Image (tube, rainbow, N blue to C red; front, side):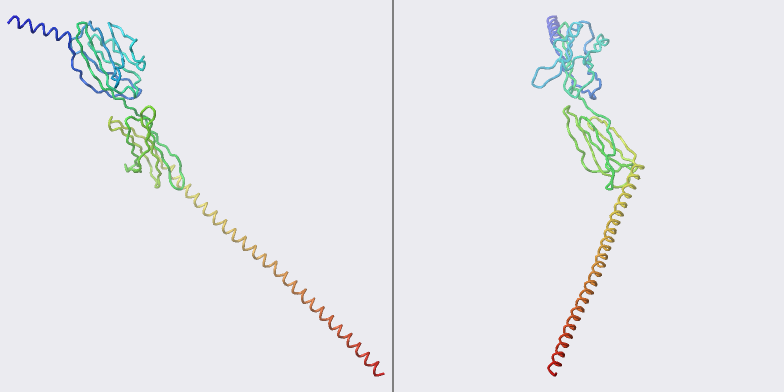
Length: 313
């Protein structure tokens, strides 16, 4: 019985000195540009003989990147990944309570990934915790009037740098969708999505609402714009411009018609006198020729009479 107790005691000591607690995976959500804390707590009672606390990020196909390394009461900078320089730290006042949580400031989209917290005590006891960090990005959407003409009012809603990709919905004051057209979406070099929706209002509405939803993160942002005065002014302006344009065209056509009519009338009046003059001239010419012929005939008769008289004598 004594040997059995001794065997169990030795086995317990050996197990304690070279054991590693199963890692517990947790998920932490963060927003791009914010600050976040990745939890890591000792399961065993806190003590001052913590030899090493190592926070690392899993990199697929490579060695883990050292995010923070704490040894013998001090931070070690030699192996720290430059991308986390001045951005990662422990909460020093909590170390005595066994809290070795990692604080990351100015979180980036590229920080998304799996992190490991490895704690090693002087007696060889190890504890490991895994944390999944998911970084999202969002911004306040903008809603503006792009143009207004006779075809309607063009409105644009834009949401820059959202991650994951969001859904965009445009509604009127009664909650009815103003367009079923899919918004334009592009991914920028940072990995986030820019979303833009353009649509034309053909009928007057008093308010337009643009809602951007990120369902995976339960995030939503809304922006609205009021259009009563602007819509009425632009609508009336469009009608006035249309009426003015139509009136101008009608006046131009009428003026052209009057001008052509007058030109034709003047042409006819100018041709008639010339025809009359030519007719008079022809008449005078014919009369002159007749008189000349009569005179010639008279001379001939006189000559003939004179010859007859001479013959009689």
